[in-house]
Image (tube, rainbow, N blue to C red):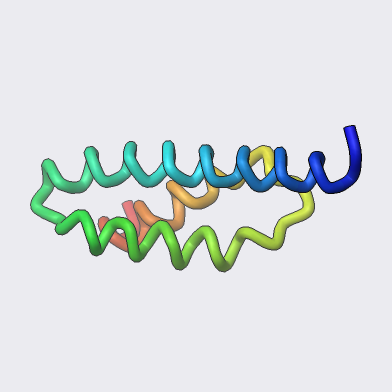
Length: 75
C-alpha cells in the first residue's frame, strides 16, 4: 500500500466513523425534540475540534460525549 492510498483509507475510515456517529446521535436526539441540523452541527464542531488527534481510535466516543454535554448539559 502506498502512502497516498493509506491516507485515502484513513480519510475514508474517518468519514465512515463520523457518519455512523452522526446518524446514531441524530436518532437519539430527534426522539427528544432536537432538530437534526442542530445535532449535525454539534457533531461537526466536535469532530473539527478533536479531528487533529494523532490517535483516532476514541474519536467517536469523544465526539459523542462532547455532543451529549452540549445538547443535554452536564449529567
